[in-house]
Length: 433
Image 1 (cartoon, rainbow, N blue to C red):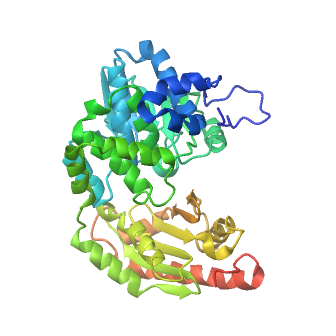
Image 2 (tube, rainbow, N blue to C red):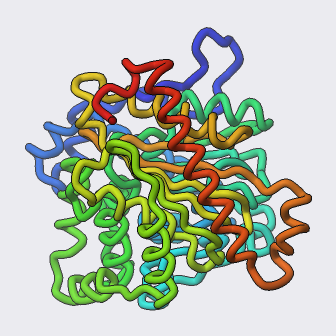
Image 3 (cartoon, helix red, strand yellow):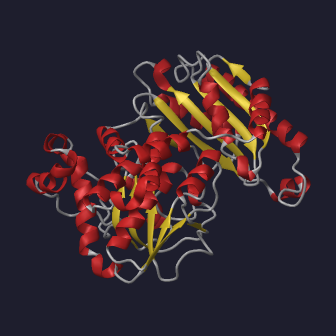
């Protein structure tokens, strides 16, 4: 396996328990060849070796699974890739004898996600109150430890049974687990080189022969996870994403459900959010910053939608949407590094500088690079107690006017940071202005 354990020169045993022995080419071909094709399997042996490791590890752990409960955590805000991955893992664990497996998600921010859960009959449980006591702790489409980054409100645990995630770097996960007191991640598959976790889990589900058990609605949910996380198979999609999407959608009934899931509607309030944000956009060169104002919890995904719309404007290199929510001042960022020539990673340094300047104490830009040129992510700064009290957050009418002016102030600060950078580090922003 080519996954790093993140331990470097540290002699302490790694927390992430990765497969210690790579399977032979014959073993991988024998397992996945009949499902994915022998040539495809040979051409993508390295990735499928990780799926083989997951298959073998879960089979060896069947005794530990049988008769037990399992908690499957997604991010606090569930999305199609996480929910689709969780459905496959739930089916696998139940086939191996799990007494019950629960999908744990805090909230659903996007209308498409709520439509997915309702249309596919997915039962969700609260990540804290709804978890099974003494259940095996699993995570999909996000990495441990719980209680940080995009799982902030979830109470942490010390021991994890199975993790699959295509976002995080193994070394970062190892370091974060060690700093938060995590003892072990028994089956760890993080930093997967795929466009969606659902593609990896679908391949694993295929070899466990559970995809038929999911039914048309379940298969459509997994396919939607691949579809949305790769921007309709246009950005960051790998050969495995394409192959598993094809296999999941071969029957007409699944395709009909998938069409329903893609054809979602948004609340009328979203139009008001987007209109206000676009009208107030601050623009400097190829950088556009839109103040959204106060956004209710059920509408949080509109922040990312605004950032996406900014990137659709010709000549835009960085699109930033700033909003106030119950959690804090949130920033959603989309960027296109093609304007930077050969030094494309430089765009992350530019964004880091802008956020640090405009948001002292920012939690950090949690970004994801989508080859070959897209970068997206976000950050959040919690509200100080005096501001929460002044705005009466969580206990009354939202501070619409104050929140909008707050966002406009930060938008202007981001533009000012860019202007300062133009004089202090002109080489860093070459191609952006």
